[in-house]
Image (cartoon, rainbow, N blue to C red):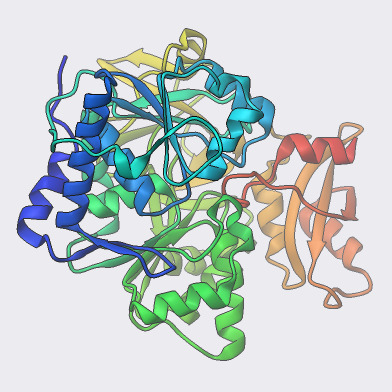
Length: 498
């Protein structure tokens, strides 16, 4: 069944605010809404003239920049499906993801095109388009420019993305045009974005939503495949120079920025909204963010590949409840009004009693109803009940009397009755603990911590053991996920403790 093409929103914006900047790159390149509309229309026309059929799956792999968004929107516009993968994923996971896609073509940067030498799954495709020169057969993106095309109603999904694979193999999720529209409405309402905003986003899909709201999108001056390594001086310079009004990112992206600005006694007075998520957000970071962005609403954001947003809460409310020291886990606030949220017994469909831990399940227009050609994953994570398709998130949480959600960990992660996010939050409430990770050693809870050098007391291990009620505490590196650099990588931590 055909659906209205999501790119129609860009066409509308080009007509009403064509001269307004749409995307600004760190190097100085920039493009307005009218030019972005024209370039995507010509790229879509070029794909069609090359013979790329509607519904073709095209891998799109390039750094966040103008060429990436011309490619993505052009592929959408042509009625094809853009496939996004995380280039920082481990090679076996990347190969497994690509092998399931039956790709027709590959649009990518010269560096990305070199993956064809390493990954057999990228060889033998019908079409290769590069954003620059590469010593492999390809067509230049600049030359793939035909007569302006579309956007026409589309039969196929617009976008395929993958889960991180931190809790099993990556699962492919197809986002249809109607799903992207529903997500656009939910995120725009949630984030309060509009044409008057200047947004600095760190995730490709979030930037698509910012564009659809008419905001100018400033691309972070950082390697966003390793967000934790972003240079805080460069990021703060961008935020100040462009008088950015909204921004979003992971805790590992904002933590160095907050520390650097506080050390220099500087603030970001233009910010009115700051969203932080992708992992548990320490209350220490929330305090720092409120200090460097005194005019902004600092918001903890909870979502997933399958459903975004799920819930949110302002930092001030978290801190007023005791933050990390509350010993209740990670509070992510009230559910988004656009979806239904319940807590079920893991593996069942019965709701848990008030205050008891249960698995977070959600349903709504911006909640993914099925995975792409993966009945095994559908059977595990999707439940048809009461006329709705519910998604099992795999997260365990409780809800308080006000309806707020407190995350405790993932299904099956409790160790001798202790939930990781509860213990880690308590540990990180101490000023000399930088990061904490709870795992198991010989069946007993064991806490690995990274410390701020030279700040810990002599009896730091005894203090942590008593405060967190764990028998074993040791100093070491806490491994984190490759996408957000914020979630504890439980598999890697188990190897360390083993």
